[in-house]
Image (cartoon, rainbow, N blue to C red; front, side, top):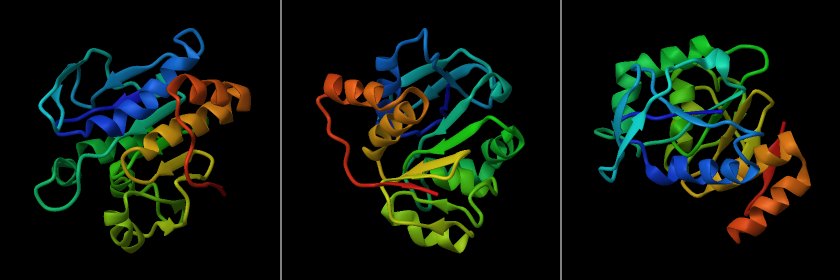
Length: 193
């Protein structure tokens, strides 16, 4: 499982699912932070430096999670959309057996890659109108699962996305165990297309 990081990424957008996946254990679910710009240091929205040592290798992952980075003009997310490198890499990564997941406004990077058009999806409430305008079929749900595309609402819903993917891949008991460890109860609905 790869989590794609880039400058200005929101910490909670990637911390939630990473923590959940960590409960399953490295032997069952290997995780790494990657960036499309080779191995490098990424600075988060709060100024934390994270070293992404693993190369961009979408063929080596079963799941690629794309976290958000704010929204609107001047946001780190908008810089990535305009730069175009990450959306192009995400579009090229698509293949059978790969699940692409968007947390919060990370869904808008998947949208910029052309991956949400005519598909059930969701994002942070501030970007829902834009997601619709870009062709996404916005549906109500904290997590929206359309097979190889899984998206979730804003910020803390990344925890719910992680729990849903654990349930999907490892069963309900594994997800319930993760909830117990985190002392967290899932919120909202999971819309399965």
